[in-house]
Each structure stands twice: as structure tokens, then as C-alpha cells.
Image (cartoon, rainbow, N blue to C red; front, side, top):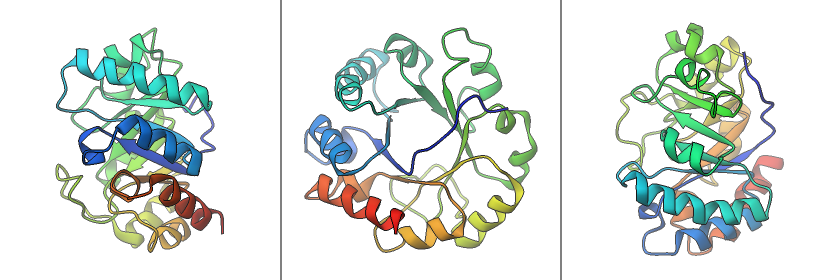
Length: 211
């Protein structure tokens, strides 16, 4: 079962490295001003202490604009900043385990799937949304082998009513196609983090979604 509705349409996945020399906090704020609805902080290579420091800094911005902050696969960080939720993949903490943790169980839990058979498992059933990764091959998502494509998204949409958050080489030119395939929310990294003007990039993406 899901505990939360998922009304978000533009989801920024951010790390300091993905911002290519720009201040990631400024990028996040500009993205929010442009139309991002929800932000995930993903710092896979940081120590927990550094991850926590960045999360606290980012939380000041997300709280200012009432934007949910999701933490990528770090229960301690999610707990200590009282994040809105946590996102996990196949090799991370299981959603069923997270639902048993007092400080996490009532939070938003996102779960990335890589195979259709996962749609029927208990992890999916207790998650609030499914991360579909990647829709197209991307340099920022090299740990998966599946490329779902538009047909894959459409197939998943037929098999589940869970909110779908699609990531993987999502950009302005393919945003509408991906939405039309059946996704609920577009997750982006480079399309905003690497943009010369993150606010404009987010604004254009959001407008494409809303068309």
C-alpha cells in the first residue's frame, strides 16, 4: 500500500558533482523557482557526515518554498534532517524494511525498478512511487542495464496504478513523449543541473509537461 498521494510532476535529482562547478544550492533554488516540485539529494560517494551537511543546507531552501526533500538511500541522513522521504534502488535498503523503521515508516518511500517482475513484489506494494530507470541510456545512470524506452513505460503503466517517476536522459525534446507514454512525473539531472540557466531549464520542462 502507499501512504501518500504523489502530485508532483517535475522531480530534480541533484548532487554537487552533477552541477559541474556551480553552487548546487543555488541550482536547487533556481530549479524550484522554475517549477521543480520535489527534490532528491543523491550523494552516493560522500561520507554520511558530508551528506548530512549538504542535506541540512538544502533543507533550508526546500523548506523555504515548501518543496519535499527526498534523501537517496541514507536512513541516517533522512532521519536527522526529518526529510519528506527516502528513495532506494535494488541494491539499497528495502522498502519493506523502511516501513518498519519508526522514523521512516510514515515518510514518502520511492523504489526504483529495473524488471517487470518487480511490479508484483512486496517492495513495490509498500512504496509510494516507482522510479523507472532509465527510460533512455544516460551517463549519469550507469549502474543499470535496462533501457525501458517509451514502449516499456507504456507497458508498466498498463500493469500498475502506482505513480511512475521516469528518469534517464529526460530533456525538453522528449519530455512530452515520455509523459504521453504514461508517466506521472519526470525526473531530471543533467537537463537542469548542467544547464546554463537552471531556472529557465526547469520552467521550460514544466511548461512542456503542462501542455
